[in-house]
Image 1 (cartoon, one colour):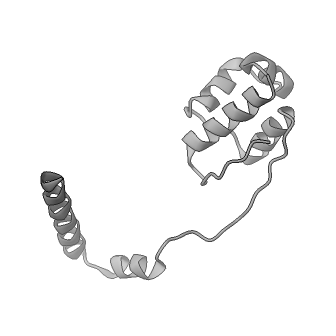
Image 2 (cartoon, helix red, strand yellow):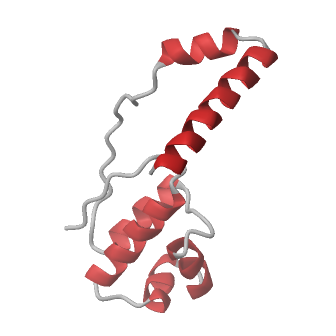
Amino acid sequence: MVRASIRVGDAGAVAGLIRAARTAAGLTQASLAERLGTTQSVISRWERGRDEPRLSTLARVMHACGHALSLAVEPDDVDRAQIRQQLAMTPSERLAMVTNVSRVLAAAHRVG
């Protein structure tokens, strides 16, 4: 069984998932492509993170490799209050905040 936790838009994680499922199934890129009715170059692009299949296609990939795609939707760790606060800032306030953070990071880098 191949288990992975990926975030939407994380092409690297999707690439690793496809590669892991394919190799666990003992398939070559060409044989997986044949099962899916596509080309080996498409599989290669997915596995290198150069392109990403649609969710429905990812489910077909997993099925072709002998796995089922199970999705879990979970809340993210985003601090919505902080986002609202930043959106309420003027552009000059945002710039000042970014400048201050940059200074702190630069100072920490010099110390470390």
